[in-house]
Structure formats: structure tokens, C-alpha cells
Length: 201
Image (cartoon, rainbow, N blue to C red; front, top):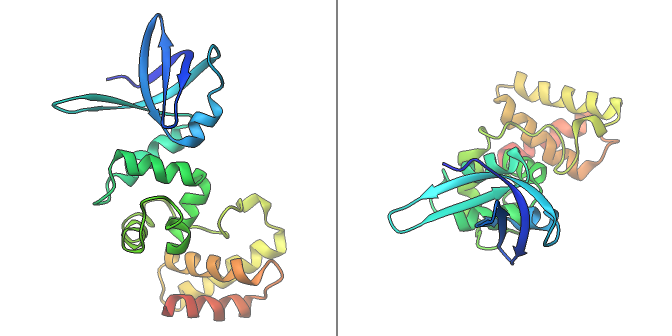
């Protein structure tokens, strides 16, 4: 199996690139995000590869990062998601945003991906939210970006919901959605109340 390709960009299409490795051109299917970062024809490139072998073809899928490759495999564990749709989803979101949306059960955000309707988005969040790890902040925001006071408020609200009997990943996702609407200045009480409303939905 091919796990990595390091060579020269030959051509770049809308959903693929041809990578010249020692005079052999490999057709590699990629997300739009990976394609936008691999450079122009003639430039060096290195891609992580997932190889799919079928009776009638061998397809190579290329990724600029290990995280994107992992999500490509993870998405396909959900019924109704094949390689093509997985790439479309990865084209629609940065990996961190996708991870947060899944963990927070943010169906509305996930339906922004081409080919993903509400039912499939719900299936994705149901099956993958625990696998991707619970979100601890509003989508697109890194934990290190929170002010200490906001981070402390978030953790206190989450702990309060856990003490009420909710599982931690559910509590974190609910508080994340609440914080996304309330902002960094929200009090613990505000986040707890809004979090309970999220959990009741």
C-alpha cells in the first residue's frame, strides 16, 4: 500500500492532482483545502496517502495533514458516507471546525457541506461526537485563545452539569453551544441555564 508520496506537482484539477514521483505520475484525489496548499505545477510536494483497492480500480487519496487523513477514514465509518462525500465534507470545513461541530452536535453547521442533508448530519454527530472528543469551546476557537476568566467560567458550568448527572461530553457540548451565543462575558449561571436548555432539546 502507498502511504506517502513525495514528488513534484504535475497538474492540479478541481478534485485531484497528478504528482510526478521519479517520472511516474500518480493521480491523487484530494480535498479542496489540500489542493489549495500544494502549490503550482513544478513545485515539490509531500502528501500522506490512503489507498483504496477495489476489484475494478485503485484510488489514491492525498492529505496535507495527518488529522485530515484521520477524519477522512472516520467519516466513512458512517453509513451513507463514501470517499467522495468525505472529501466534500473536508473541503467545506477546516479540521478543527469540523471536529468542534461534530462534538457539539451542530447539525446546522454540518449541513453546509455539499451533499449533507439534515438526516445525514444528525447521523454524523450521533456516531462521531464521542470519537472526535468533546468540544470545550465554541466552534473555531482554540482552548488557548480563551481568557483565563472565560475558561474558568466554562469549566465551572460544565462541572455543574456533570454533577447534575449528565455525561461530560454532553455537558461540554451544551455549554459550548451556550457560550457561542452568550459570549466571553457570560456568567456561570447563564451558561448553566442555557446549557440545560440545550440538553433539553
